[in-house]
Image: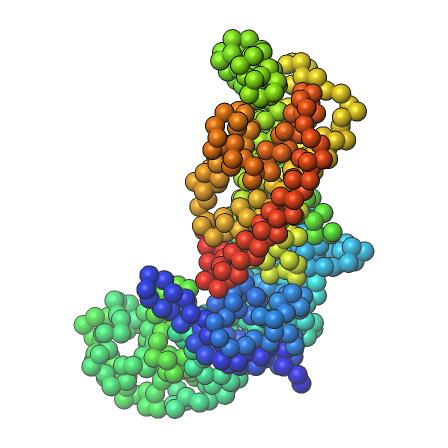
Length: 324
Length: 267
């Protein structure tokens, strides 16, 4: 199977106030035709910068990016014909125009032949369940509906390659679930699109992607299938503690496993996850360490998730770095 | 062509979404004209001035200024509307999506420019009607073709300025000051409000500004002032041939620069 996206030694450096940030640092990977490829990493990892280089919105400083057989620097218009771009966030459409007018405008921009525009727009509105609201201004839409329309816009010229950047960002669980299902079942399985998806939600990538690459501080740290990455962990078990209290990385400084601890804060609770071959022994030491700082509510032994692998490989939490 | 038409339709529909904006476009030509007339009367003490005629070639100060103001409508449209055309897309959040479409940005800019010209022309027609019906400007319809000819040459040159303004706005982001400065320079060095012959510096610099030749021609046609038709049209055409590629080059350079620096969609 041919490669739809080939990235070789790509570098993008931003200079501001005499400091240099290597947002994309010698990144190389290939995405096969029809593959759903995930680019994972925390905010600030360089994922969006990379997507912008691929979509011709940024000019890389070094390296090459070939998309659908065309070089992004030498043939940007040919590249743009082959890609559809979907980004997270609400403000990517004309709010004062109706759904149908938004799609018709972008159809013209993306070179859809005039005779096919109505058919294509009707098909996409039907596909996204927006047919009944087609003539309403986008400003009246919910966030989820706006994202559905943004998907329709990305598909307006039926591109073989889709660049999807944080598609569920800011969406409620219902729409986030819908978008994930749509990306996997409709876009990947049914329409056979080649998809590059960026996300900092590891469970999203685990659920959707054929292969994933971990990106951290501009570099690719690991690349494989989710299953292979999880199997690559030295231990097959993860000890998880649900706690109430104020805990951070420093709370575990005296433990020799400290660097591999992943701390997640959710709904007022603190979840501590740590990869181990001997959960029983670790548990007693862990409880001793946090006895004065937090109350342990429950203990669980589970399999590693992609996030555990990310923490193990990079030593960084997904919430560690600043926004891109 | 589809892109240009789509851009015009989109801009028109967005304009319709703001009804107050339409009311402004209908009422403001009248509000614009009255102070100019009163100002003229206060300064020259009537409608005609021999002293003014010695410099401007016509004693009719008020029609002179009104024609200048009509032309300045097109100038303001190209500087402001074109300057802020892509800036508006940044506010909508759509800039990156239109620039990742497989079209050259100049097609989108051209669509925006044509839409602005349509709006300006509507505005100018209302202004002209006010001038003819209220202030007695003589207008003979057989002159309409040469007037249109000079207007097209003028607007083409202003598009060049507009492309540069659009690029510079992408570069500096907050461009109100820059565009005001640009507009005031054009006001100072072209005979929009006064005859540039009054000062040797303004007279010399005005030679390089397309508005000068358009104004000489339009005033010549509307106020029956003698002027060289072919000389003015050829100079205007020559300036257009320089200014349009220059405006496009500036826009293209800024686009590449912002893509290199990563500042394209920054506010």
